[in-house]
Amino acid sequence: MRFKSQRANAQLPEVNLIPMLNVMMAVLAFFVMISMTLTAQEGVNVQLPGPSEAEVPEQQTTPDPLIVELDEQGQIAIAQIPLSPEQLNPQIQAYLQANPQGSVFLVANPELAYEQVVQVLSQMRQAGGDRVSLAIE
Image 1 (cartoon, rainbow, N blue to C red):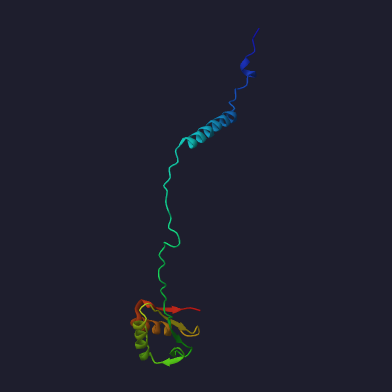
Image 2 (image 1 turned 135 degrees about the horizontal axis):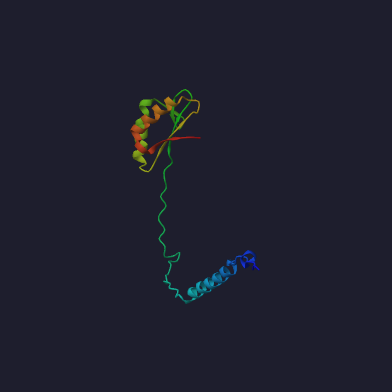
């Protein structure tokens, strides 16, 4: 008579990890909460200045920029007064000497060729340096 092997009917044991992970997370949460309550909270007392103690810097007003207009015929004008290219640089230099914080803007007609705009802008930069820029509407 032969005995049947118990191995054939036996199932492999399973390890159920979910309850073990639940317990581990509860223990971890407990230790985190305890460590947070046991640490001493340190702070520094700071007295912030009130509005009367603060220094208010004086307002620096920037002068109005000098607007150089370039129309569709390539004519240069400042404040609606036509100028020749030779008269432009002395006007810019005089403005920048009178207004050290001032800036000069070139407002060109959109229909004008870009080459003409670049020529006038480079001429203006010779007089005003980095305070000359092209304004776009």
